[in-house]
Structures are given as structure tokens and as C-alpha cells.
Image 1: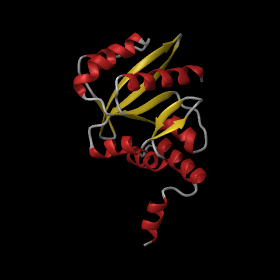
Image 2 (image 1 turned 30 degrees about the horizontal axis):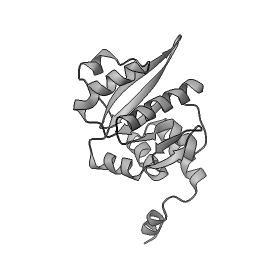
Image 3 (image 1 turned 120 degrees about the vertical axis):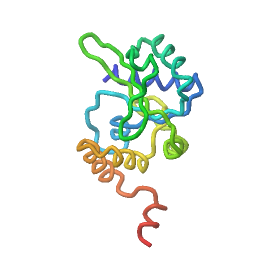
Image 4 (image 1 turned 180 degrees about the horizontal axis):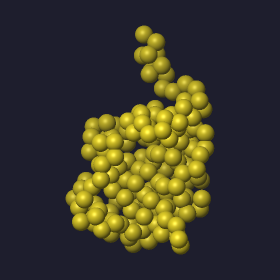
Length: 169
């Protein structure tokens, strides 16, 4: 768990230093808003332009992360229609992935703007809202994502009051 927290802190601090707006999401956000579960990676959405990726990669490498050659050469993956780059921290025989979804849509920029400063694992970080976490999990719609949605809704009972009022009309 310490390796996960250290990676989270290192990347969040780097985003802050580079003035890259971001939010933490994924399994760690599910832990914050739902029923805690194991997670083995750290997921962010970040408003970093593709022309700044070489600088980001250089700086994460300075922090001990490895950037796969494909990403170094300019390739960008896509997951659930969202552009994504990855880097990895090697921990002996194991590794820890950092997934950075590139905010290139209006929706992703709104997700970042609605994020809020929260204490996560004893560290202040920009965290996705529970409402946006549910939306992102719906977009991905893998079995694990659907279970995460159920857990978040179970714990959060009432999400955004405006959404609740709008649904009742």
C-alpha cells in the first residue's frame, strides 16, 4: 500500500509543480467514496496537452518511473474513447501502473473543474466528485466498474441534490 500512496503523491505533486490541472479517479476514488477495495494502479484525468507529454515523461522518469517506448514515441492509447498514456514504477518483481487520461473533451475538462481538494491516504489531492466517478464508471461499464458504481451509490446514499431534484420532475 505504501508504494501506491508514494506513487499517488509523487505524480500529484508533479502535476502541481507543472501546473497541470488534474483529478484522481479510479479505484482510489472508489475507496474514498464507496466500499474500499484493492486497487493496483493509480488513475488520473489531466489537462496536459500532447505537446507537453515529452516534458511530463522526462519528469516522471526523474522520479523513478518508466515510460514505455510506445508512449515515448508519441503513441496514445484509448480506453472507453478517452486518450490515455501510462507509466510504471518497478517494485522488485512487481510493478505499479499510473494511467493518465488526457483531458481532450469538454466533459473531461468539466470533470477536472468540478474536482475537489480531499484528504486521500493522508495526502491532499484533487479528487473527482462522486457524481463524476459514477459517470466515468458508467462510460467504461466493465464488470468491476459496475460493481464500483453500486458500492459508491450504497455509501453515498444521496448524490448531488440538484441531480436528485431534476430526476424527480
